[in-house]
Image: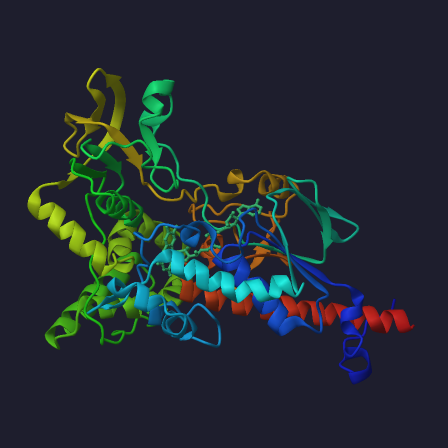
Length: 487
Ligand SMILES: Cc1cc2nc3c(=O)[nH]c(=O)nc-3n(C[C@H](O)[C@H](O)[C@H](O)COP(=O)(O)OP(=O)(O)OC[C@H]3O[C@@H](n4cnc5c(N)ncnc54)[C@H](O)[C@@H]3O)c2cc1C
């Protein structure tokens, strides 16, 4: 076959007849955005975009597939920038759909902090017309196996659907949380009192007067606090974490990002920290809140990360991650008010330490906590809520199909525990070190290449870039294919 790469109007008009199929595994915010962009931008090169996603709707995923009105976005609506090319789409939709009129509590001096379920609804409405028109095929199955056959991907769902694809995009998002060792081998009665804080039924059967111990003190823990308070919980709520640090509040709206971190001399974790501190001081001297510095840092983190050698990335994660996270992932103002009130009245407490053991006696759960100074304290409670957040370590081990792809040499978990090894185009890097232009990873598990890839705006930008790379690759392939066929 003669391989010539050239552009010709005659060939272009027939390009999509090659039947290219792109399969996206996972239809949360990331997978849905990738699918939508593939349809919007790729009509000439792609015949079918198929998304494997067991949830009823595309676009919501773990974070936004909730009916709960008590959990809110931690980012102001105008900063969500969820639709590439239409940054104000979500904020506009909140107005035009009447959502803000039924949820006036979303409006705060710090900006509009909408319910997460409403963002889920917004995303569903972005995707539904494409699914109804048949441009995106939603297969409500979990992918259980992927293999490579005759130069194509062979994807099998748990319900038995099998499809072949030219390109595959892994968008499986957040893995499950890890279970602390102390909670691993509980008897059935004790285990019933321990719940995953993110599960929809986490609070079913929890008595309003019961004391609750939440393991974790990040945004997942504060979601649990919001849910408890919304159902009128009277008992004590204790948050236990190794650092004791809580997410910080937002500043009032109206400040713009402040600071430049794209300086090529920032090549160590220590230099990054010093630069952030100096910038916060300079901002403070001008009356600019530290939040503006973190907003600038957030926008530039990918550049900072890409300049650091692996040893410094490791140091950054080990020493500064929690500190970075609490400043970067700030709590919605509504939650901030609840927390302030809870701490002031003594209903909410924070504890520093690690859960060492749990047992059940006649009065409830007895948790042994190992404190920072290596002392043991005993904490009594009625229920434990596990809110340690997703565990990205050895990402490929979380999914059967990824484990198989790893065994076949196609993918590998990154050594820093952030996700799947890939390049900045989203192409996975095989075990032999070569980038694969047929197998992509999108959203949070692509963090090894970016450092920061958790929030919607960063994911939207990565998805747009990845889709362009996929389409260019398909266009090249199609041109080669047709020239070859005409011979
Ligand atoms: C509780 C929570 C709140 C958040 N709040 C915000 C916020 O306010 N603002 C913000 O910017 N960011 C927020 N985030 C960050 C979040 O990372 C992104 O907003 C975004 O939702 C990530 O989407 P995702 O599709 O990559 O992952 P997920 O939401 O985890 O979705 C992954 C999807 O893949 C599917 N899946 C997994 N495995 C398979 C398989 N084998 N086969 C088929 N399907 C599969 C799952 O069913 C799931 O629907 C939040 C995250 C969480 C966890």
